[in-house]
Length: 333
Ligand code: FAD
Image (tube, rainbow, N blue to C red; front, side, top):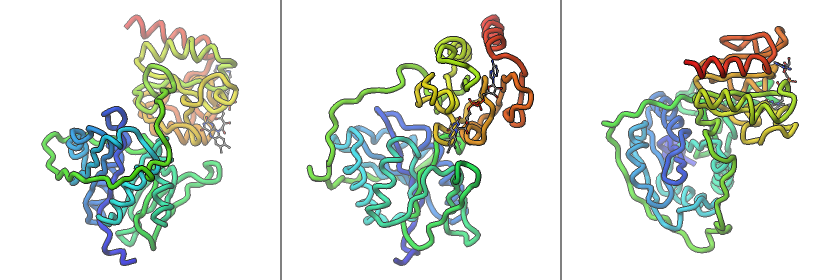
């Protein structure tokens, strides 16, 4: 393989019901940083039905080029069909790097593409940089239960690829005047490329703001002692702040709240403006998911809890007393 033939850092953009996911913008921002170092350009691949109007948004967030596969057959995500489209794209355009969001779809699609193209994939990355050689991507991800950070490279194959957690990188400011190229492509698909059939979309997690997208998260841990606070006092505080309820794995494992709310290494990575941790000790695996928060407020009755080492504001006390007081005080503002 002549590596010099492979050019461009490509974000596999993800959209749902006509709205681009924030992680696609975050990846475009970081792709620009990598591309500036390597001396390369940034592209995006956009797949779906009636998605062409979204191309300009990708350009506004950093893409020089957007390749659009707009096809009624691609309306609903389909692992094998989407993977075929992207593998065909690889053979035609010879990209150097694929960046994929570590979302449910990205975690399904990324390995399928990597396997088909016989290249490596670093899953669930929390860091992306350029190696000292000025051209190889260094993918960083937690390993051994979050106790070390592994740095992984793919020196001999192309594309270099990985899935990257949402909220690891800041979403860049949109530049409405940004200019880029929109290239319409045709998906070459037969019925055999759709190995599964879309039957019905059942939305999980109910109404309300998702923790990945929330500006404020009020999270509860084992200290909440049961499910009631998650639908009661924590939700009340989240509601007055226009936020969402999160949880530690201990709370999720106890069955007090759905796993969709779990923050941490095996849960979601979040990046709110304010993260309020109630009855959460601050284990390294929890911190892995929320350390990108702008401001962390911890409420814990143990003054030695590790969460106090990483918070901006700490309140030593019983969350069952403090949280309702906070809610009442904020309501008065
Ligand atoms: P605890 O550590 O038991 O802490 C409870 C805290 O509540 C204590 O500090 C206590 O002082 C306080 N408290 C009790 N009562 C009150 C009260 N009334 N008011 C105020 N404070 C009170 N964990 C995650 O969260 N997310 C993950 O994604 C995750 N992934 C993991 C992956 C691996 C491979 C492993 C090994 C572990 C993972 N964990 C994860 C688990 C993690 O190690 C911790 O066990 C977990 O985060 C602890 O949850 P906690 O802080 O709620 O509970």
